[in-house]
Amino acid sequence: MSVVSKLIVVLLTIISLLIVPACAPAEQSAGTDRIGVAVSILPQQEFVTAVGGDRVSVTVMVPPGASPHTYEVTPAQMAQLSKAKMYAKVGSPIEFEIAWLEKLIAQNRDMLVVDCSKGIKLIESTDEHEPGIDPHIWTSLRNVKIMVNNICAGLVQIDPASRQYYETNRDDYVARLNALDSDISASLKSVNNRTFIVYHPAWGYFAHDYGLKQVAIEEGGKEPQAAYMTRIIKQARDQNIKVVFVSPEFSSRNAEVVASEIGGRVVVISSLAVNYLENMEEVVKAFKEALQ
Ligand SMILES: [Zn+2]
Image (cartoon, rainbow, N blue to C red):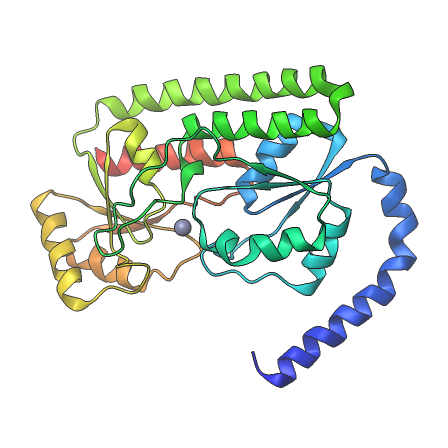
């Protein structure tokens, strides 16, 4: 960031601080006793809201369109954390939390930090160029059940009087996750092709749940080299793959190259949508169509 743009950010922050007090009373009356919960990524907003209902107010750190592998927190977001009672971290080794979580917690030492990944079996990344743990735990509905359970335990700890309310909400949401999980198992059981190509490898846990194989174009988190692209194209031709999945947060240029080489098409699916369950239904339709 240049000196000039830094100055602009500072000025905008000062202006926003001057403006906020004027609107504060209205905001306060709307949610005086709501529990402030901060989360890292958008799908977690649905998880927290599903359990906490109208007793929580959720703040998401990585905004729509941004990547949790590269996003940098703004000063205004840092300031918001002073009001939070709980931070629900993803807890898998995702770059955003590795880089920022300590600084975020330092803003508010009284926040209860809940690890959504507690009890989840982490799996290796399918990226042969960058071995390590795959951080995208939330693309598995089975993992989300555990994440929601951890969120529920955190809310009960902060607000034990509402235990019944949170647990009933949790059970309702888990029932919806179970129903969709069964639908997906049934729907993907009979597909012809079990290998899919994706630009950014966000779907490892999803693939693991339903016996699919993810092949990523991205090479070690970076744009791929020509030789690797050639290998992917050959594999796609050999296995008669006709779809290349891309995420809205990443460039699709190389995905388009692969798609045109195999006479296929690029299909956008998001792993970071705020409407998690609804989005997963769309994702499954896209997978079913691509794997026929
Ligand atoms: Zn990712």
